Length: 122
Length: 122
DNA sequence: GCCTACATGTAGAAAGCCTACATGTAGGCT
DNA sequence: AGCCTACATGTAGGCTTTCTACATGTAGGC
Image (tube, rainbow over all chains, first blue to last red):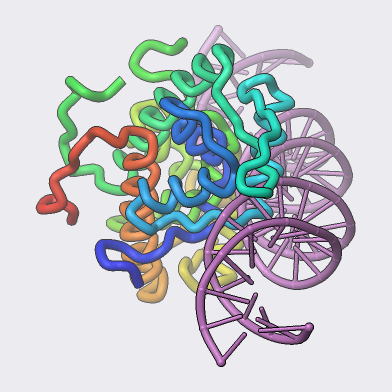
């Protein structure tokens, strides 16, 4: 177990992968391998997304027009670097508010007593 | 969209249904139809889970030993009322902490700048 | 008689995430 | 040279769970 919270159960990610990928690409383009590391780092070690999930997902997002990827060779190794398109940036905004709605709804059901400041909720 | 918080996209629920169902049954037994209404009420109208999702899920949870259901007839209508078993109560505890880990991890990735007080984690 | 609310259930489809495998370069160690 | 690890990408097939649509039946209002 990683200190501060073990791994996240794999299937729970379903439907939220897009938001995660778009989010790590928000401020800088990255290639797949680096994206996986960024995901792990940002989540505090909780997210270990397998390559078999990430690479197809990146292609899906590229196909959808949210990402633009191009090949580069660095140190003899081929990389496909992805950057967010303007369309992807808009999608990220939508994904973020969708996440807030979702997390809020689930949270209210799981912990009905807890009052969350409505100021931040959207 | 809908005033007060539009709907949650349907597929996002994947993997969190169990937690929701166990949670609404925590303090009182309910039947399927009432569970759906409770889910809507508690989430502030954000969750509209269709019957075709709830009924099979309840059976799955009963089969798993987390719920115990029994038939009753009220006002000429047949109801299957479910209550949490001790096993289900334990599962709920696990689901809740899994949710916190999950939501925390996703939140950190989506909003890296935001510092969440770990003190109030529980 | 008809329609809505209450109440449960099944069948088939769709989605996307995971496991496991396949491929290839670069560099360190023995 | 040979081996192993890190870097880097990709495919195939399976699996779980949810959704959509449909089917069934009672009770009560109009």
